Length: 267
Image 1: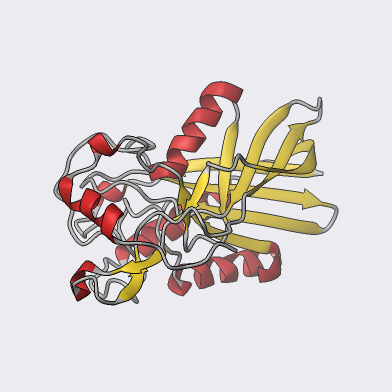
Image 2: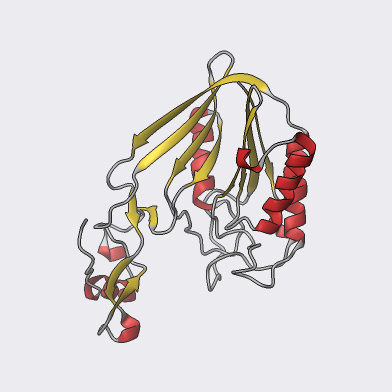
C-alpha cells in the first residue's frame, strides 16, 4: 500500500463575506483551533485501487466545487467518483459557500478552494506503508444530544417544541473509528478519526478551524503526527461542554433550565 497526505492553509481573510451559521457575531475572543483553516488530502493507493479523502474546514461542500474536482480527477488520473470522499469539518467559523444558506456568497471562494486542492493533488508524492482500522466506544459523558422537546418560552411555555437544550436521555452513537497509517517501518504517521458530532462552538468574528482544529492540534502535540477528521451523523450530537455549576449560568438560561421540562422518554 502507498499513501500521500498533505494539508494547506486556506486564507479566508481575503474574502469580505460573513462567516457561516450564527445570526449574530460581535465577539473577538480567542477561538478554538487557532486562526488557521485547512484543506487536507489523504490519498491511499493499493494496486489499482484508489481512496481519496478531501477534507475542508468549511460548513458545507457545494456541488459547484465537488463536481469540478470529480471531473479533474477523472480526466487526469482516471479516478472514479466512487473512490473520492469529500468531507466538511462543519466549522461555522469560515465563510459559507452553499447557496441554500447564503445567496450572497463570493463565488471566488470556490475558485480558490479548487485551485488549492488541485495544487495538492498535482504535487502528490507517495510513501510505502500499512493501514489498520480500529474502533472504540467513548466514555458516557463525552457526547450529548443538543436538542430536546420542552416548553417553549416563545409560546409562553404553553406548548412543547424542539429546543436547543442538552438532552442526556437521547441515545447517541458513541463509537470513535480510526484509520491508522504507518510508514514502512511500522511507525504511526497519520490518523483519520471519525465520530458523530455537530462540532460548532465559536460565535466570534474570527476565522477558525473550530472544535475539530482543536482536536488536530492536541493530536499533533501529543502524538507528533498529522490527522484528518471524517464527519459522521452530525445533526443532534455535540461534545458535552454543558456546565456542572449553575453559578456560571446567566439568569435567562437558568430560568429555561428549570422551566423547560423534557418530555421525550428515555430509549
